Length: 281
Image (cartoon, rainbow, N blue to C red):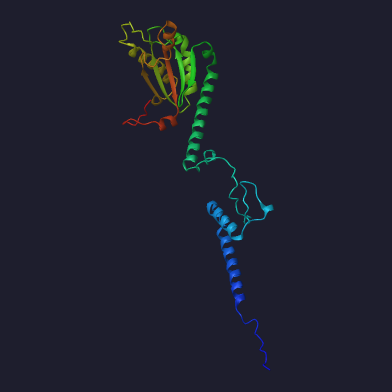
């Protein structure tokens, strides 16, 4: 009787094929997950389509509404179908440029300018207080410019028409002005002005002569009251630089005047100089 032979079981290597397939699928899956961790919307959609086709149809209860993605997103990944809310590019906030080194210098310059303006206004206020009666009588006006205090003497109280001789009644006013200026460091420029009517007096050749003579007359009174001569200068401007239109007698009377300009030392330092070193008025 022939002997039966036992068949060996388990000697076949078929399970290795299944194992290799599973490992390959897992490796592919994790490579795909790694590749979609940095979101590229177009690429993400292509991968999602690939996964859907690889794993077959989704269950009926997983059907998503139109426009919704059926692929579960990786933690922290952005939804490729979502709409990012925020201001349009044209409404982005413009950042201010960082401050430059000149900002501090500009601030210092403005602070110095404000300080100087305050000093001029305080000087003008002192003079207005001292000369309040003459101002109230309409004989004087006091104003400031960017770098000067101006004392304006009107002709009706100071000089007879067509004359450069100061009226005696006005001399006390000039003396009080001199008392306020004698101890200051200001440079003093006295300027005479006339209206546009040509002078008919035989003593003066033109309005230039008359305006210069009146300026010198005021200058001499200031010097006689003790103001140093090197602080004083005089000039005549004739009918130039009117402060009112020369279209009526009242307006012409306003233009006939003598102005005493008080120029602080810092104003001269800020101006260009002539060849002889003297400041330009």
